[in-house]
Length: 496
Image (cartoon, rainbow, N blue to C red; front, side):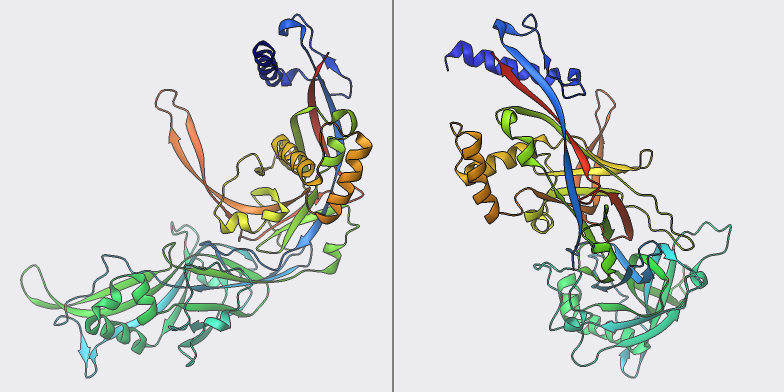
C-alpha cells in the first residue's frame, strides 16, 4: 500500500468511529457520501442482531480470597436452593500490640493470669428469620497444618484437614439474631456473637507473651506458635445467615498501675487480635441445588452466590462474521440480560448480584487466581440497573474480533479462502475446541478508588480489584436455548 493510500485508509477508519452514533438501527445499509470522506472513499455501515443462547452451570467452588464471611444456613424461597456457609479465620498481630510489664500483670501460682478470654463475631447485616435458633461450633485450628498465604483456597476446602490433631479447644453455642440486636432508637449498628473461651486459654497467651516475645513479633509467628485460628462451623438451624464484618480474639487482664496522684491501683486491660486482610479468612460453602434449576431446556438461567451457579453464554461469533460480513469491521456488539422479578412469597427474597463479570470460560478461575482486572478486550463488567432490571454489556466488539482471529489462526483460514473452504476448516477446528466462543457470567465484588481531577473537579473512578462475590445473591436471567437473548452488532466496511 503506498503512503497516500495508507494515510487515507487510517483517516477513514478514524472517521468510522466518530460516525457510529449515526448508524441506522435497522438491517439496511447506510452509505456515507463521498462529500464527507476524502478522495471518494465510501464507508458503509449496517446493523444486525443474532440469537445468543445460555444455560446454568453449577460450580462446586470459587476462590475464597475475601473478607466476606457468611455464617449460617438458609433456603432460598424462590428456588429452594439450600446454602450453608461457615469459615476459618486466622488473627493478625499489630505492630503496636503490647501487654503491661511482667511485674505489673496479675498473676497466680502458675504465672501471668488472664481475667477472661473470648471470640467475637461482629456483623452489620443478616438474612432470614431473626428468631431462628442457630447452632455454632467453634474449633481451634492446627499449628502444624496451617492455612498457607502462598496457596489459593477455594470454598470447597475441607476444614477438617486444618483442625488441631490433638483435639484442641472446642466450644458449641446456640444463638438467635434477635437476641443480638440492639434496642430501637440506639445509634449502634453493629451486632455481635460472643463466644466465651476458658480463662486458661487467655492465661496461656499471656504466659507465652512473656516467655517468648518473639512469638508476637508478627502474625506468622503468632499463628504458628500461639493461636493458629478457629473454624466457625454452622452445625444446626436453617433460616438465618449473618454477614460477619469482623472476627476477633480478645484477652482481658488486670495489672498494677499508678493513679495521677501516685497511688497504687488495679487497672483492667484488653488486647484484641482481629482477622484482617493481612491474614487468611477462608469461607467454606456447601450448596444443595435442585436439579430443576440445571435443566438445559429452561427458558432462563441463574447466577447465584456464594459459589453456586454461573451462566454460560455462547456467543454467535460464527454467524456474526459469516458471508458478506467476514471482512467487515465490527464497531459495536452489545448484549443486555434482563432479570426476572422474584415473585416468591412468603419468605425472604435474595438480592440480585450488584455486578456481573463476563469472562471467557477458559479463564473463569485463572482470572481471579491471577488477580486480573477487566480490560474491555476479553473481560467486562456490568452493574445491575434497577431502573431497567438489566445487566448490559454495551460493547464487546473487541472480544468478538479476537475470537474471530483466534479461530482463523487455529483453523488455518486465509483471506483467499472461499466461504465454503472457511466453513470446512472451522468445523474441524471447532470440534476440537468446543468452548472457543463461550463466556461465563459470574457474580463479583468490585473495589474502586476515587480521585478528583483538580482542573475539572470531575471524580475519577479507578478499578482496583475484582473478586468472586461471596455475599448471598440470586439472579434469574432471561435466556436459555428457546428464549434467547439478542446481540446487536454494528458493522462498517469500505465500498469501492
